[in-house]
Amino acid sequence: MKCPYCRFEDSKVIDSRDADNKKRRRRECLSCGRRFTTYESIELIPLMVKKSDGTYQPYSREKLFNGLMVATKKRPIPLERLNTIVDELEDKFANSMQGQVTTAEIGTSVLEVLKKLDTVSYVRFASVYKDFDTTKRFVELISELTE
Ligand SMILES: [Zn+2]
Image (cartoon, rainbow, N blue to C red; front, top):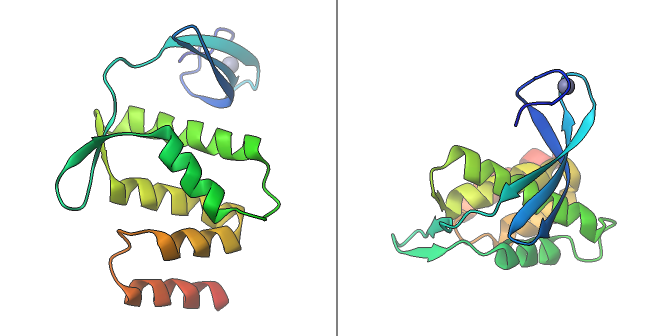
């Protein structure tokens, strides 16, 4: 999405909402910092999620959002922030993984975000994250955090 002012190729999404089968996005240019709005058609082909047992299911925004809600429960993180996180993750999945994403990739991406955002939420999410390969890895993670 090119910046209409300086033609720079990269921008960040600062707000996103649905409007009549279009996604309205407020973007901020990463070069000149000016803001602009884009309207993008909502993808007709649903993103598919590949589970660890090899089966697929349609990507569910609600599921991802609920996962974040559980992890950030009673933490000082506003709902809008969670919405933005989900938007950014969806952008990432849509851009980098052609039509499909694995549960492991989703989990890892969420962990990356939470690690920077809030340690308590991060550990909570990690502990319920089913594809987190072994307990050993979880123990390593906790020790990383307490170092
Ligand atoms: Zn620009």
